[in-house]
Length: 297
Image 1 (tube, one colour):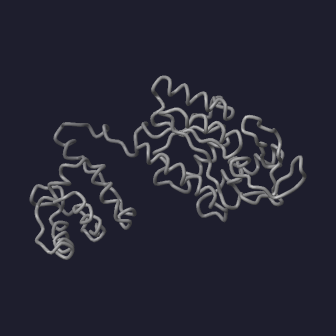
Image 2 (tube, rainbow, N blue to C red):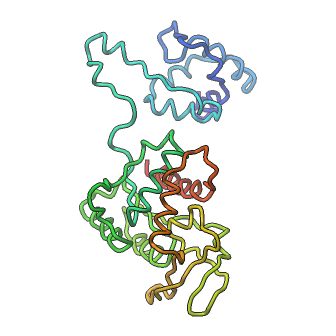
Image 3 (cartoon, one colour):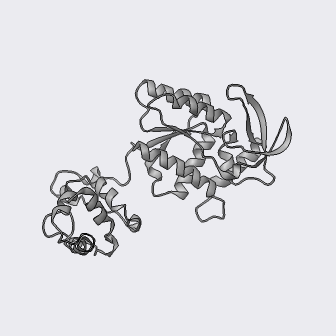
C-alpha cells in the first residue's frame, strides 16, 4: 500500500469511537477493532478488500511519526495520548523513575530583544496555547537579561552561528525600523533563524506624532514593538523619535511613560484565557512563532 494511500485511510478513521483498553490480538500495532473500522473506508474509497500492510507500515514507524499521521484528522487533536511503558518496567529493562511527563529540555529556544518581550510571549503561550507551551524555552530572566536591544540580540545570533549552535534557536525582533534592519542583516547569513513580530492590517493607519505633526501612518516595520500587540490605552499614538540613517526611516514607539508601559504589560501578565481581553493580536504573534518553529523541527 502506498504511504499516501495509508495516510488517507488513517485520516478517515474515528479514533474517538474505539473502546478504551482495546488490544490487538494479532501482534500488530493497530487494535483489532481499529482494523475492522479500516475495512469499510478502504472498500468505499478504493473498491477492494483491505490488506494487512497498513498495520505493518505503522508498526515500522516511530511513535511520534504515528502520532503525526493520526493528527491529520482534526477530531483526533482533542484526544488524550496515553503512553504505555509498564511492560518494559515490569520486565526489568527500565525503572519507573526513568519515565517523566512532558517534553525534555531540548525544546526550541526563543530569544527576544528584552525582558518585556520574553515575559509577554511566554505568558501568551501559557494561556493561549497551553498544549504546546512546553515545547519552547526562554532565557532565564531572574538574572540580568543578556540582550538589551536589537544589536545585542543580533550579535548573539551571529555568535551562535560561529560556533555551530544556532540550530533550535529563534530570534524574535520587534516590528520596527531597527528590528527590520537587524533581521535583514541576519537573513544574509545562512544557518540563523530569525523573525519579526507580524505586520497587522490595523497598524497600516495608526495615529502618530512627530516632526511633521500628527497624522495617520503605517507603523508596520517602523514602530510596532510588543506593546502594540497588547491592549492599547485610550488615545494611543506613536511618537516618532530617532531617524535611522542606515534604514532611511524614523524609529517610533508608543507615546507613554515607563510607568504606563509597565502597567500595560502587567495587565496582560495577569490575564487568563477566559478574561475579557483583546487577545487577537497576540494570537497572531504566536502564529508566526509557531510557523517559524515548525519549519525548524
